[in-house]
Length: 447
Image 1 (tube, rainbow, N blue to C red):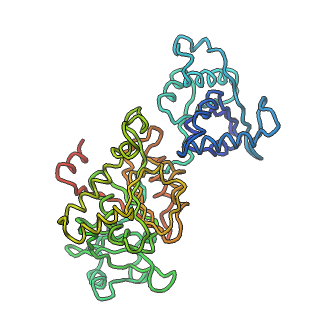
Image 2: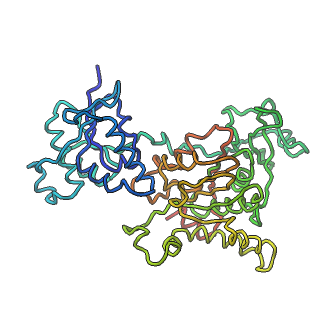
Image 3: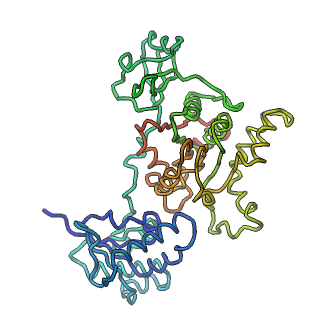
């Protein structure tokens, strides 16, 4: 039996999340309420990714319509449904007392969706929104409502960790990792579940253990298991196996893209910054950046002072990590002076993510902090700007998301980890153990 044709009503936040969303509803029809177009008009100007999506979507609509009229709907493409723009209607009698504020944009969208469901009783009418409150309001009046899940990670509970623990490994194999070559071929050790390129291993046999990684050997396209040593980077010493793996990935010249996930206090940003400083001679510039996500309804424009004063509160965590590294060295020491010189000459810069769009990312060590607050499209935009000799590191905690329309399954960091695993130039490690302090670790685990 053929599936009933559905009608999807798209909210503004879905379009601002993915301007290509109308191509992802297969043969089903789409309604764009007129309040959505009005809201998109307010987002067309600006350099943020949401402004880009607003402009792209409007251009796509214009391309689809060309010299045609929208009344009756337009076919999106062969095998796809139709798209219709629906104008405002008088508030349905069923909604008048429930939502008296008829001028509110969400209520206007809800009213159009409700009218459509009453008129199209032979079809499933579904409101698609990333706004949880609007979805709840829709369900309260008997409307079906869904989140936009096209770019969702399938199972975040089993997201690639970049590391595995292997037990009962023979003492001989562990011993061979400690000899002068420090490597094993795939023929000597092949676990039941095949290893991914640049995946890390903790090999154990009772009290004996070894840290290793599956990486490119001396022969092209040959992968071997190599020992991973504990290395310090710009005075920062790894405190556990996962941090040692993170340092190895950050220093690995073949891993041009690295992701480091983990809860607060696991050392993600600190290790990335220290590794960047350790390898500074290989890059033209070190760039630290993070998205500006205000924790209130006031954006950066409301803050007093010049632009540096405005962005400083958002960039402060990056300055804090830099302070930890600088604090290891006396002010008159060579390491301290070298770091200060890099800041003065802008070889090391800290900027909000919005201000680097359009820049040429050539021979740069770029650290993108709090990447869980980026959309998958934003992450793609950043990576596709990488020029020759550039290394990009994304750090973040997929369980601590401040973006109002992103979740553990839909944020850019989760998507990146899920999609990139298995690529030869990609490495990932999930840091599990907090090292900031006993108090921070306790709070992270039980609160």
